[in-house]
Image (cartoon, rainbow, N blue to C red; front, side, top):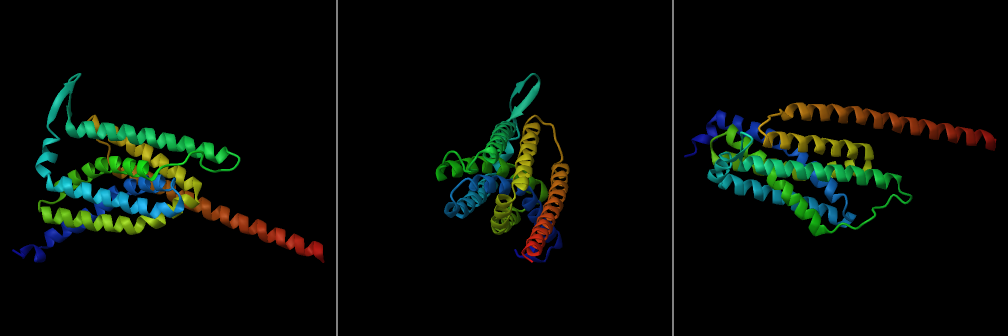
Length: 253
């Protein structure tokens, strides 16, 4: 019964699946971080933990109901000769919701940036943030589970990989959230990334497959460029501050 422990193929599948689950979970972390960032500081950590806990529970429930997940790929009806399955409906609704939410957040971020006090105009309830996170968790979890089913056959390996990947995301969510909150340009990139993911989900719902690798690579490249810009601006500010201190010292003399 413990032959799987010494089977290298199972371990290769496990670590590969963990890596893929973490990559696929990046959009989930970003969405949770942006929504949690709208809450008071003392509630943000709790919202992130509850959001990722909901993601873990939804993934495990879907894995335990694999027969139902498989049925989601069966056509329910056809529109203009295009067959629509339960999975397509979930992806379409989730993608449209993510698009609407991301565009709204971009608009809100720009409005706050141009406001006089820079403060959030309206309070956001903790419950509404958790509900929104849970709704998108279902969509992201479906994508995650379908990937797991295609990678390995053993349900135990799938569950272990999902648990490990969510734990990794839990530890990474805090630093990522703080970094996004501290850099508005990174937050705008993250929102643009969510817009792209929304478009991909809608396309997937219409049976138009877009490899996510292209999306992740493009976004990673943009983040690297922005990190270089942040470093350059930081050096320029230090140079200006040093120059100003030198001018002040010379005038005092």
